[in-house]
Length: 71
Image (cartoon, rainbow, N blue to C red; front, top):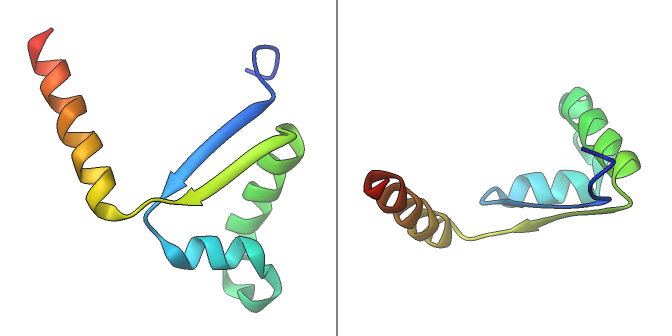
């Protein structure tokens, strides 16, 4: 995968996850998960994770489901 792209964009509807990434020391119980995110940040220089409201995710999911039914 690294051979094809150095840019990875992720979206989440979890504001707490965004807070954990910005202030990892404030979330010691999630150290293992944060280590995985740090690994992604190292592997992909253009790593980005952004907050996406749940309503947007539901719309995208609905459209995706409709597309797969048509196939």
